[in-house]
Length: 228
Image (cartoon, rainbow, N blue to C red):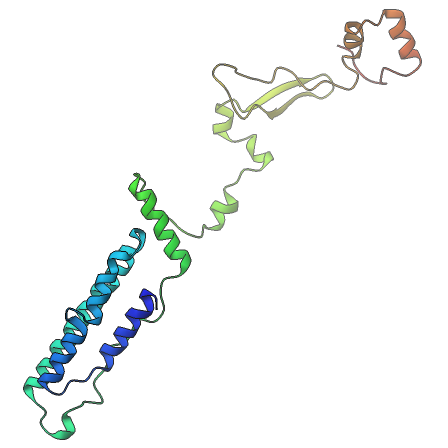
């Protein structure tokens, strides 16, 4: 049996224990708290428990030891007082000790192990709500139309005005990150279709006559496009 099953078995035995005579009380004490008693054996086995589980089982074993000692004292007091009559030797209406049913969930055990490990290297546990409310999950989020009016983003220069040759001035989002050594910023609008074709073809070695032929053939040049 594992530690949990052994503790549960001893707790059940404590609850059902009866010792009407001093000799029976002493036999109970030896069987539970003596050198080879069941509670003592569990305490001896505690030294083999993994370090991360000692806190869990240490508390359970201390409770078991206290329950065994309390039960022994109850039985001893009852035996010394003696029954008023033969019918009172056993009180069938007396509440018995209830065994702890169940154990910690495996996830709780693993969570406690993780907390212990990180606690040894300096981390602490901060408590917070496990379920957030509607505002923090949804209501406080910024959607694109809201970003343009956010005073903090505007102050940080995240919202910038750009001049466009066709649409005039419009707002857009700036770079989300800014590096100290390599700062970035938006200098102009995105190029239009065919806007820099002439410059690119010139750099590739096409002469003016060749570029004119390509435009005449409709290979380059887009109707309505503006060349820089």
